[in-house]
Image (tube, rainbow over all chains, first blue to last red; front, side):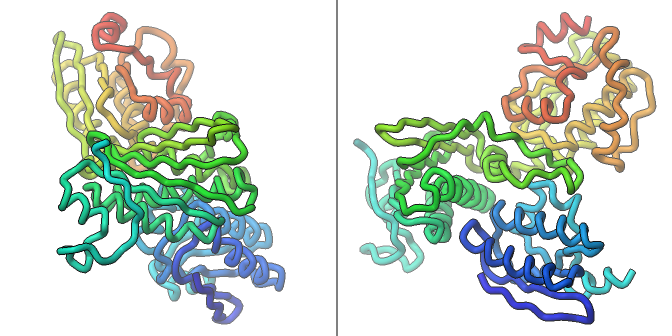
Length: 112
Length: 311
């Protein structure tokens, strides 16, 4: 898994590439926790190049959404790929997390 | 033994194409039923290889894309739990066997390590609001959702065995549904449901019941022994049909799960049942239980006892 963080105004965009599993998920957890600790609460997870996630990846996303919302922010998903979407649906997380077609749409959603 | 054991590695076999796995080559050459076995030693860094091994073996043994994906994910969850909990993140070995038995793919993980009581792992409440979502138990939940059977055997001396089975090639597992109707009496119908009831087809089930209702049917037994899967949409259909049979306006199904919250438990429990279920599989039974519907739609083991209760 590879992580890459960019920003657009106050919004931090974390691009996740490769596979999220019990081995790699802690790295994403650290990256998201660092953002939140630094006061960045408007986060977008760009999943365009995320090919796979297990429940370990979902746990990280769920915890970060909770934490971000506790600080009046949010973690929103962008460009979720089919295999990842299947797992999100299986977990029922789609009803909790806001998901957008593209990073631009996810970023724009924070303006509303 | 009419089985071929082999370690799984992509690559050369005489007369094989570049893409042919050794397992596929062995099957082509020997024509024997096949069993793949490989030991994964170490810890979580083994997960990607485990997924590749399982995915490719599932394909070779005749599974479709959905089967391969389900097997990869279920095995990933199982192995991650073993590495994290049974081995407590120390190095250990999982011997993974994959074979086909009739139309089922069987995956068996043999390992030595800590045991646990699967019945004590709570099933996650997928409808709970964010603050109440537990973050544990999701891996086991996935395994049970993706596989048709998951069993654990713990043995401190001989080692533990986790067995997962999945029926291969159910056409569009999530989306395939076939209904057939019997009319044992003018006002009574038995609907046999085969396949899975989910968001893509639950309205078809409501439509069928609506048609029957229009023909004077007041009592329905849903025979679901061949229903592999029922999602929350299936439960919405049960609620809608139940209301319709009681002469109430069915809820707007667009509201999805929310309509279940409007269930009037007490009223449904009194009087003679008009909608009953016959012989649900353990998997469907669990969904009903989880939704608290078991007390509302009575369950009978067979059609005759259901008809007696409806009469």
